[in-house]
Image 1 (cartoon, rainbow, N blue to C red):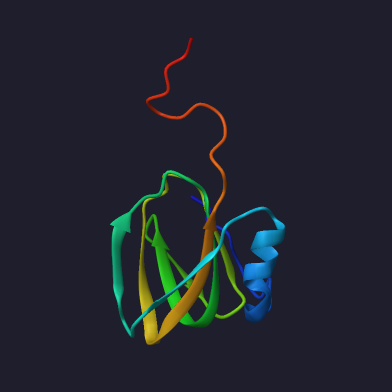
Image 2: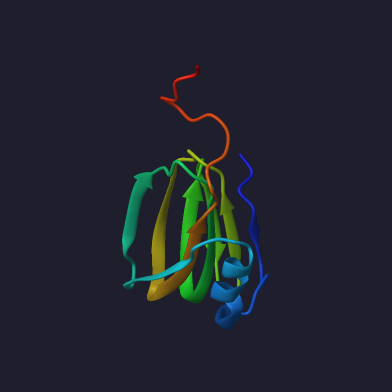
Length: 108
């Protein structure tokens, strides 16, 4: 599976405004040094920017290291895990709006 991490796509201080201009609702979060995020999924496509520190996302056995300004596009329902860098990390993320039929929808 290809999970695009795009290096240096935005200046860290511009990330939230960039996502708002795209009609998204970004939020900021931080994790301490070496903090682990166990494998999980999200029902929506996640757009995430690293704005301070470092983080490594693991998807399908492949590591995707991120530094400030890097963007991650994680498709909906993609199993992933992550670990914050040795000095911790701060990220800004948003989820793309759900479109089309969803699991559990009833058609009429």
